[in-house]
Image (cartoon, rainbow, N blue to C red; front, side, top):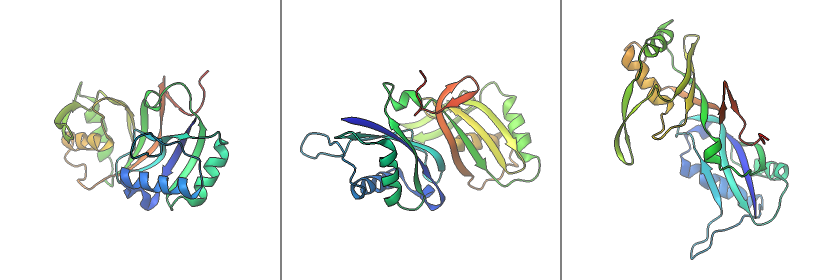
Length: 222
């Protein structure tokens, strides 16, 4: 069995696809592209597909990852090309490679995000500066395990206001995960002038956090 890893994008209307929608779209594309999938054993076999750190619904992304188990060896470039011919609009496979020994979960250590939020001049920069004055900043969020309280600053590697409507954010992947909208909520708490409208979120990259860089998890690191 070959293990193949893909990096794919969610663009345009596809950003509103749930994780289940993404799974259905990919499984349909794999069948249409005649990719030789390996299947689990048991009474209800299913294709061996493993997702890692999927972005939330409504977030666009240039860096989603999935691992496929194949029943025979395939050229990663040909699999990528075949899938892109049949995937629905908004889903694009950007890279493919054979899996390394490390799990995807181990390799996806941090993410870069672009947060777009219309605000009056200077407000986002002021809010970012105010948040940086705190040693910690706890927020609460309801999870599947109940209400959780966690420190957003513990996950922030870097945050910068760019212009009047954009925040660039680098988040370390912790448990429980701190999401970009948690950081937006913290900015609203330190500065009530930050607009209450839903922000546009886009994941730009995710991978191995090494120094000041996020390294591509599909590339061998020697």
